[in-house]
View 1 (cartoon, rainbow, N blue to C red):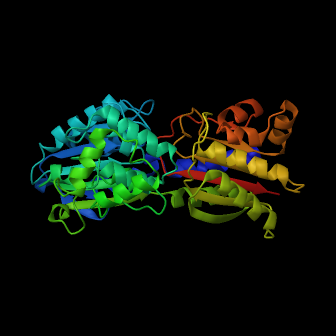
View 2 (view 1 turned 180 degrees about the vertical axis):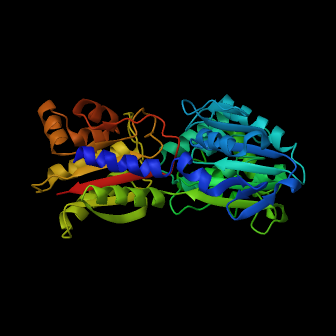
Length: 436
């Protein structure tokens, strides 16, 4: 069953990889460029420029090169270290994630420089996927990279949702996030192809919405920072910039209805739901009854894991069954262990199973579709009766490792870590439960 769970997960990831998605939404035929529902005659196109950011951007760029060939004038993409691919016509930059670094800033500079070349007859294709908020960066006036790194770290550790983090990030950008990249590309036509790593697929939050109108404000940013008690610990440069925004002394991000978006088209091409439906098909082929519980899972990982175990205990439907969930939980870090939300989820599920009176122990797998779980080399973890028995023999106490936020070392000892390497996609997490 553990092998089946991994096979189902692999099918989910494969369904949302760029080589599966890009050719459905981008074609060049009969001297016409088709991007989603938008069709452009080749004779009317000036130059085609490509920009991209995110964990899937290198693979998206590779497929774009295959489709466009020598019609592509120039391109720049930025992806996470270890996720880069050799491209023929585009520059590929690797940068820091989840905390930005100097390469993130350099990528921002290079991308803005490229966009300033674009004219009225030109088309800019933006390849956007999760991770871009850290990978593509610009520093507002008076704000230094270490200031932004500190803010990003604090947001990652305090339990803020991805929507909250990206609201803050958008207002700590002067020319990229929150629709601001469109201002730079104007008057060119801009078409974005987007893979969603945010629950509910809100285009304005994915990758901090560089090509999407932004309804959030500096006031909301301040409320988020106050909610997590961060206002007293932020660098003075950050506070100064935010106060300028609160006092309307600097321009807000472009809002819905702004004329700058008249030539912008945003296409959502990859989602968690697509991955879950592929997982359901794979489960059915393995003779499990698939049940998609949700594709909008959010909340504290340990709490949601306990709720899953309660759901399993109450389940009285057809068997064998494959219960599927997708989304993205959070972890409030309290101690200095190593792990990620998926490994923490599975460890919390293991702890709940130990405390239950269940005789038939299910297989529970949780992993990131991007192949990365927190600051580790694992994508996630899996638990079953054998792994629980191994942990017991080794004297590994799940509750202790949960308190230490040290799920990584628990599963390294007990077994059950899932290590895929970079998958070249990113549509949040997949959780698979198999019951006989």
